[in-house]
Image 1 (cartoon, rainbow, N blue to C red):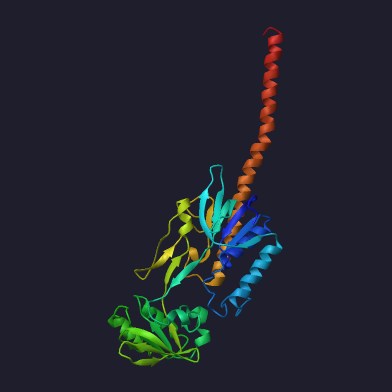
Image 2: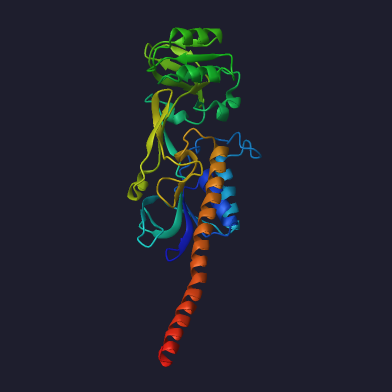
Length: 341
């Protein structure tokens, strides 16, 4: 990272959204720096899915290819974590990393993603992204026709169970800490052949590094090959406080399930010059959607810079004409004075 250089855009976050935005900006001949903390949300997953043209690609390979593509157009990608960001008096921003390095940029694109907060059940974290899952569109095909459990922790659990039923006829809803389903919900579950299991879930049964079952507080074990959970979705955005940019609650089904950075349809935040894209804005967005949002934000940022540069160019063009007019006026006054007018 060139600390003496002022970049057109600093992209904070090196996932699909950040690299997508950086690629669009680099191809627009912008100087762009990507700061990547190296903690992608999908790191535990073996493969990325529903990404057109790259179906089944390991996430790390997808990101490595993205970094190479950004670099091929002159973009820079560095490893590091942003500690703070602030607006400069003369315009633009200063971004400071945890190691003390700092860089200036005219615009910021925030694509730091989020952290999944798992329910407090022993064993979930170790199986996360493997056979403890959250998204049927990301993982449903891989566990199709297998016994699937859904861990209820909120009011959306019934909807979640009905959704996973599309991939398997053997789905069980573990009520755990979730609310009791209503009569209509029980009817829906029964109509779809989804079993409802009472009691708290206290752990998982694993054999040969594979999920075998879900253990209840009573000691009973229900055979399952996959367990779907709803996670808390907390975005990585603490460093934005210095810009006066705050997160807001993310609600779904009347329940707060996380936080997000509010933006307009272009990705612009309420702070002029700062855009955001990807899971930091839309926590439930899939990988390909995050990449698309980054590209869209990158194009809008470039257009914003073009508009600013055009204003500067017009002002610079007018300045010589203004100076010439002043000279001509002064010469006219002198001429009149010479002639006694």
